[in-house]
Amino acid sequence: SEMQNNFLDFTKKERLDSGTMIVQADNGTIFYYKYSAPQRLYVKWNGREMDATLPGVSYDVGAHGNAFYVRTNNEIYKAVFTPADGMKITLLRGKLEDEEVYSEGLCEIVQDGKRFVYRVGDDSEIDFIDVSDPELEGLDMIGIHRRKAIFLAKISDCRRSVLKFRENAIVVACKFQRIYCCESSPFLYVVGNGNLYTINTDTMEFLPDLAIEHTTAAQTCLRDPASRSRFFVQPDEIWTVNGVGVHDGVITLSGRKGNDFYEMTAQLPKDYFEDTSNEELRKMGERIKELEADETQWAVERADLRLRIVKMEEMLREGKVGAFQSTKPFLEFDRLEKLSKPLVCIQLENGSLLYFDNAKPFELYTIIRGNPQNADLSPIEGEFDCAFKGTIGNHAYFRSVRGKVVKFYRATIDNDTIILEQINAMKTTEISLFHNQPLYFLELSKEWSVYKYHENHYDVEGDKFDISEINHLSKYDRQYHRGVLYLFRENSSATVERVNENVVKVEGPLLDVASFYAPPHSSYIYILNCDRHIILIMNTANLAVTQINYEPPIESDNHSIVGIHDGILTMTFDGILGRHLSTT
Image 1 (cartoon, helix red, strand yellow):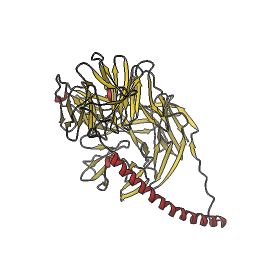
Image 2: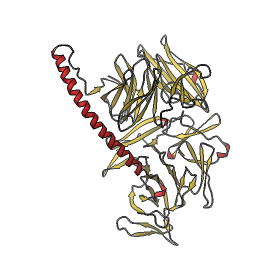
Image 3: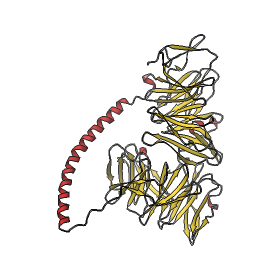
Image 4: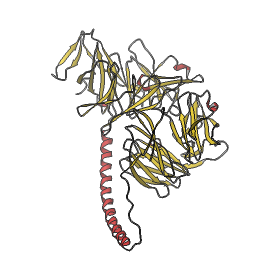
């Protein structure tokens, strides 16, 4: 239904269980979180309610991206829903020392007198925003949108304003109860004082207010979806908003009146949301063309394959080639070890295993002749966080960030002893970090210079890569491997393209939730999609890609590759019963 007289006409109003709030993810999934006992987290799908198993007493954190986050006292968990796999909840990380975790999925940490903010699912070492400006002190942070922190300036009247504060903050002045924002849309939706305030961050302007409650002199008017007639709420029956989401032009609110909770939806006017229908039609048209081209190509390849089979059969009869090798439909893991806690497992090139607890107090050890041997961690004493970032040869690399300084560390096993040492330190304002490789880079005039942790960009020249032909570079996962920069991105069609001598672009449908293992001592890059239980293996010599399915040894949601040594694959699997290490 359309807006009438600048108020939202709610066409759906359903009662929720007492003590239930709703949160909407970017993809439209609505998570129902019952915070009163007995606690419950679920979604509704095809008339069914699909639950996640909560890790004990939990506290809501909020949603961003396509996930919902909850926390216990010291741990943060991530819940994701897909129609194929249902609800999955996994341990994301431990709560950092001195970290404040707020509702709406927002986090704050103060280090060396500096104030940093980020979203709970972000990498706190890379995605933090420095909001140390004294002019922001005393303002409440209410959201993060497109690398900008959103602050609320409290007002006593109905005036409202929005101000872009430097490059990394927006200050909003209006009555406030709840905010919703999505990275794909320029709009901020703020609920307060019975109104929906909509801010276009491209123009930094408010759109005309929309009343959530159409108020007459004595009554508040809502619509009953069952009878399509209006009913009235007396002024003393106050409505408060506990959740908000916008998807495909429909706003969803959870309202509370006394002890009753309701889920309500209304259509937004066309200028109040990002209309993606034309873009979707364009993508569908392109996909149809791709499928038609694929069909033609498949016909050509099928004819060529028939000829090759005939030739191979002739060669087999003449004894010129061996028989075809059979392949297993999936990998089966034959060893399973439950870890005492969610340790980060690290495998060096020689097969040695290290175990790292990345929550304070940190712990790093290996097993020597059946006995644990702990590392001297004095080099990272006093650090708030320390994260493992990959291996090169028989060295494991770590980094810590405090304020605007990043420190790099290297661990080596020598004579049955782990030696941990700091190898470099730099300002975060000077460099950009690879997400999960011990590398950093500088960008200048569409050219990247890549360096290893121990290299100083003032003293040596890094490996250079021309990225001028790559559009939307930030949407790609990057992996450096043997002097070549590989860029990975999810796409409906699979392509491997050598952009230039040192840059390769890989796109495909299985790269949406992928993690990567790119050992420098191997010719292969391993791409793990744990949602589909698939490992893609790319031969960097000829850019051929092989797909292998695997079966997790336990019921688990989060999987990662630890290493591959002498043909043995080692992985970790996280489930409700803890983290397990397994090999095949």
